[in-house]
Image 1 (spheres, helix red, strand yellow):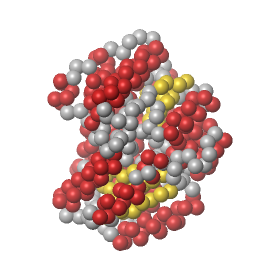
Image 2 (cartoon, rainbow, N blue to C red):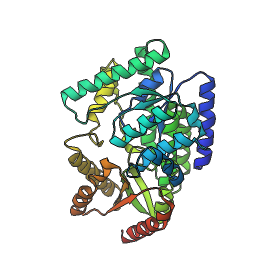
Image 3 (cartoon, helix red, strand yellow):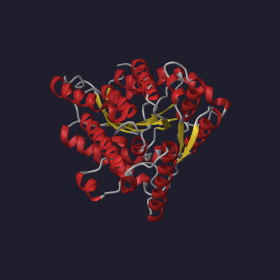
Image 4 (cartoon, rainbow, N blue to C red):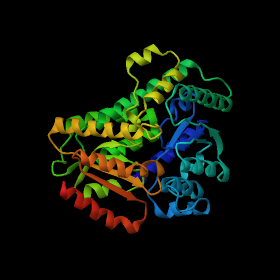
Length: 378
């Protein structure tokens, strides 16, 4: 399924949900937004994961300077134009304004102010102290109350528990798919689709797993195995194709659209011990130590995580694992640490390519050349 088909099908899906009377609540595709709460309220969560079109990105320049993260710019451009096949954005009723980063806040506030989308607020601390966890709990309660006001009645504990189990099962299935020996592009497209549709896609994920366990053909032997970290590859971006055309195959997506999303799974003991689902979300927030919200230990945690992934993969397969650190231009969170991560990993003997880019068509040839040379070196 290509991106146009995926987006066309998703537009029909959202139109059907609107006809059922569902509210659509959108937010930028970062971590820590509790989509289980949205689902338990009976609404549809739309985690924005669309980017890659230079013309759409440029439409944001009426609102923000060009030195803004190009993903945030893309989100503004999409809501301004709502072009086919993204015209389903007209169905969005509410937008969650959160503070993953400065660009996130700016883009979310612009979307809610200028494009006729009502605003919900959900703010985060950048630390994991006891007071930060308490603050996160208060924000959860506040978001729950905002959703209940829209709904017109309370969100029951059993509804929230059911939604938590559904999303937990979704992430378990994605984690299983991540272990399949298939091309990275195939994994990425099912990850992207699952994040759009949520637990409604569980039957399709079951079929995907069964088909690829039985019929999987290893077409990756002649490709260099790659760990992608940093910024995500979003729907509409051709980077995954450039990597594979250059001789690489992403076996591990250490990104928001990837492991950062589906690794946040509750084990059975944790689910049984915590009767209040909101307590589970606080635990998940506390344990999310590899996200770039973790201060002051993000760099140490990220290096440790990447080193463990690489070593475990090499021990298991006997193959080297190259690292591509994907940095979208003016993504402050990732770009701040890029040189440190590369330096430390290279000192440990790992090969790292920093791919700093935007969505301009003119850079495609240069990126392809750099990727090809990196894969050949590996």
